[in-house]
Image (cartoon, one colour):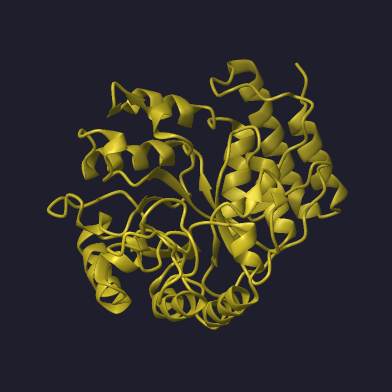
Length: 360
């Protein structure tokens, strides 16, 4: 039997020169020998891979790089803020400044790369382990829990469990989005809040410390409002102009009230690409009027103006455990007026205490 990853972990401990670690090393060796004889039902991991995290003499998780060396400690402050899709695997598409966080699609094979890359940049992540098209998780147009669990099972690896635990502990990973906009027709009609609670329990059976949540569109806070979550940690709510004709405070207060009823932490978002004032009624779609800053991704939507981004973002961010925007777009991010608005929101977010997205 090869010790593989365990040998590398022991080498890291012993090279640290701390005699207090010897009992932990011996206990770790015993655990590894026992595990090697009994077998592991998780997805296989190459035995030659170095560990992605270890534990110190107090039991705290220590992140390691690809060579098995201890990574530098990171310290995060303020409310995490940024656009979704800022990362492609382990490569940043922009910045990260002024942004401090992003939500990104990920896979089991690329999860550790993205976590380590984000930590090296001092950047925080909302994972989307079960992201992608809804058709991956539906059968005959209805949400299929078996398919969703099958995807989640790809993460059931000891190396990923350790890496995620380390990233949650040091603040690099904020949470995991389990499903996007369950209120929409693309998921069919079978989804309920109790079912999403079941999903939360399933994720936590693999990653016990990982905060888990979901994303709602602008009217989504009204979805199944008489039901209430009991296991979900956070819900992200996204704002568009059309839902309250620009009255962001009224919308914010409504979603905060629903969050309280559901017992969840509140994350918030702006739909910067489709959330400006819609272009309807004049028979000509150009998104060139007041409150419009160019075409959205589909009719009748328009992009938010920089003033809308700044005003609405500053109204929302103090109430959020993290603040997102949909989504990274190179042309939109390149506009100087938009960048100034992002910086103003980032400064406000940085001035606030670091929140938690775990269930209150």
